[in-house]
Image 1 (cartoon, rainbow, N blue to C red):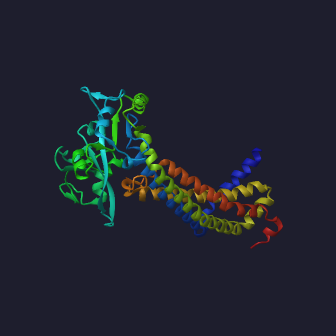
Image 2: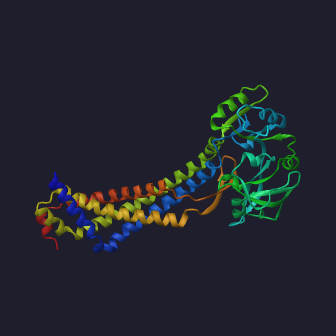
Image 3: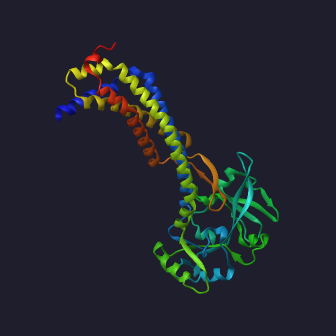
Length: 396
């Protein structure tokens, strides 16, 4: 057994060391595999970035209340009087005897993308003063907070980067809506940064909503208080609501989009991978052909068939490893942090986010590269292992 391991390591090391002698053909396999990894990681980083923007928007210490049966804020709604009842629920965090619960409105307004000038739906959220205490991660980083009772508004940092007409100091007009942008807020790159926030009373008046809201965001005493809060609301005969953890709500909101992107990414990777595998097969057949006499000599000297087979596979995997590392590095440098926006199919609103080339994606890309190298080297390795020694020694 030790002799076999020694033979195998020796032959495998020899195969890898001779790669520079076949530089042009080896480069074909490396570039092909690197290209697949770049596309694979880049496409999946869109889904990761979108998922992160949505998931990070939620906190385990907050709960969101919607009308029973609603699947998003757009399809929800309840009277203002019910919001007052909700504030009495146990499990709510209170400051100075005041419940940290923010009833809110959620409507869409049309803005234009900076990059293309095409129209996009951007959420306009009507909030009350307590909203910034509930969303304690939100910070006004430019300008100032808007004054309640006026037509002022603040806009998310990501929205100002992606959309025109909502810059600090500008006035946005759409139908009866006229708001002055007086501040820019930051929430750490979450989906909330795609929104515009203003006084809920203004939204109620402009869109003729009366005394009504679409959701209530509540700060809990602790994550463990969720069940107490939920049970009190869902069993209250005055209410017809559903209660969800904010983290679960946003995770569910991202499922359709991330699932679609992952499906596209894996499909593209498989189709491109087929081409890369053929490139690896041709490369390894070339390597076997140029090393025919060398392989036959090793066999004649007593090196066994398995050692020869593994040596060819080792060369193929080495090329795949190089391609995978180069592709992963290129994808990280080119796409990680790239800012863009896309539609959330749950609400048909735009969500601004950054591509996220994560460690998990890089590992997936490298693993896929090694699989391509293994598949691409298998047939040439079998051919090398089956070469008749006498015939091979007569090869030029």
